[in-house]
Amino acid sequence: MTYRILTLIVLLVFCFFTAAAQDGIDSFTDRGSFSAAARDLKVHDFEGIVPNSGFKHYQREGALNYAGIEFRPGGGARFGPGPVIVVGAWYQAGPAYETTTGAKLHWSTPNQPGNAFLTANLPSGVTAVGTDLWSAQPPQSTIEVTVTTADGKSRTESITTPARPAAGFIGFTSSSPIVSLRITPPKGQSGLIVDNFTIGKSAGLRSGNDTDRNEDPRPESRPPITASIGPGNRTPGQTIAPPPSNSD
Image 1 (cartoon, rainbow, N blue to C red):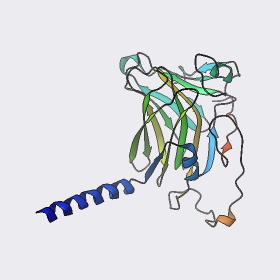
Image 2: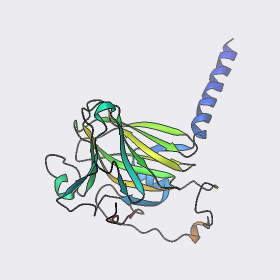
Image 3: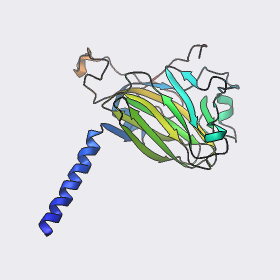
Image 4: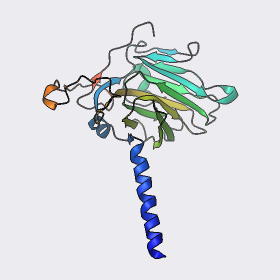
């Protein structure tokens, strides 16, 4: 009887870890670890959308389309999800926000219902995505983040935002293209602040899902990685995406 129980436990543990490996999605709460597991990263920092001391609501548009990414609020029941707002750098260091410098994406939920969410719909070919996050009020909060891939798989992680001005971070890499990242604040949380939204490729992706199929996989064939310096928690090897056109 004891042998059978032990065998059953071993089988259950094996099945659990096999299923976890088969989902092909890894999560990261540290930007450095995420960057080490990805390549061809582009950091979108919301600069150049509004003046330094300006801001813009996207109530009429329903979403912000920026650098091929659609940031669309949803849920919220009868009160709606509330619009996204791009806020210039001048506001960020003041007592209202107390975050790092630079423009940021803000989103506030009417009545803080706990069922509103912010979805980032991604361009094709993305297999690595990550972002810095702050909670609005209260400034420290547990946030649920769900990533969904083109083959219908998903993974949900919870992160707790630290005391300001530090940002929380969540990132994912996948063996299949990632189509969306959904961020859901808890009930009673007034909103989110997003910056340094990063997309790229999983460093381990070498399959037919990779759009760069003709790339020579040998390390010596790739161009050297250059370091860039900018605000936030960026690490060497990441490039900063240019500001969007005025059509967004």
